[in-house]
Amino acid sequence: MSSDAAAKILVVDDNEANRSLAKATLEDEGYTVVLASGGAEGIAAFTAERPSCVLLDVRMPDVDGFAVCERLRALPRGDETPILFLTALRDVDTFDRALRAGGDDFLTKPVRPTELVVRVQTALELRRIKAELRDHYALLKKQRDDLLRLQLQKERLTAFVVHDLKNPVNTMDLHAQLLIRDKELSPSARESAAQIRTDARHLTRMIMNLLDMSKADEGQLAPKRAEVDLPELVRSVIAELEVSARSRDVKLRSAIAVPRVVADADLLRRIVTNLAENATRYAPPASAVTISADRTDGATELRIADTGPGIPAGMREKVFDPFVQVEAGERQVGRTSRGLGLSFCRTAVEAHGGTIWVEDASPGTTFCLRLPDEP
Image (cartoon, rainbow, N blue to C red; front, top):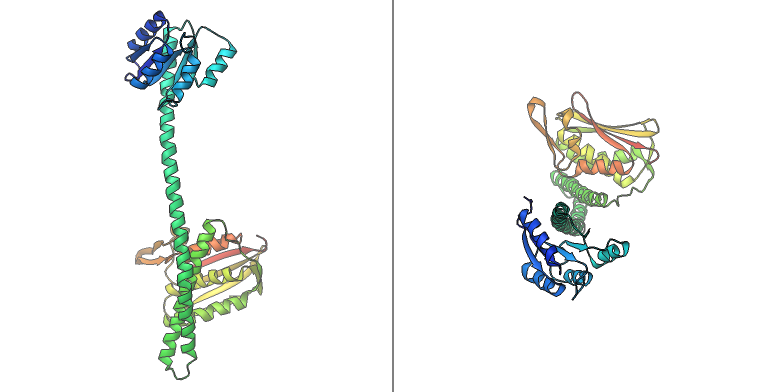
């Protein structure tokens, strides 16, 4: 019994004996068989019966099998129904004509019953596979379209964040600077204005991180390399984070033994700022965060070390993923990437051809990054 027992087979042949043999053979396998004695009758039967497969004689008096095949292919469902030619002509020209007409298989008479069954089963199996492939293609196309729609929505959101939020944040920073310069302002108010400026700069970094992560996703984050005064860059980072660090009773220290590094100054500054700000947030009161740099094997290594809760070895790679929260030992003190900060650092370092990793400072954590002289 065939696995496609419910399938309907249309047999189009002007020879009654051939039709009877095909009918008996296929019905023994459980198929439903529809007979047609000529081309025109076969076309009408195809439209009325919607068969799963067609056995089509080549030589018929009214319309030959090649013409019937071409007309069947033009009908609804005709392009997806397997058509097997039956012919006593065993030559290359007939075979080529059968293929050009749209035939799926070619059997020469006299057809052995066993061969007929096998070829019909094969044709129906191929039909099933083609239908599944069409379904898979439709599913893949839908998934692709959904991903493209999400990508466009993400680009629109990124454009909103960068263009519509950057200007008001810059305005906040400008007004905070004006307040700080006001000599009549009380020390506490001036301290508050300084904190507003620190937070505004933090928001600006977050916005730029989002923009750069989007560029990296599209393969467009390309560092603009030049010589950078590394001690001066670190001094400016410490000055920017001074208010925030002081509010936590944390000191920022520089131990830079490398005068210059070849890098994108803006990206490198934001890398160091993100790492130093992260270290400051988790450093315990009355402690220090140290930013150091050394030369080794044709590269510059920067280290930002704190004495806060460490990061378990198994989580040191995951901490660079967006929005990851990790637990620190039995104290269950969480360290989190707080958005895209650490993820941006990894992306920007790798864009320089470098690497970034976490080491245990015992106590505390050291973020390390290596920037090669040549990308």
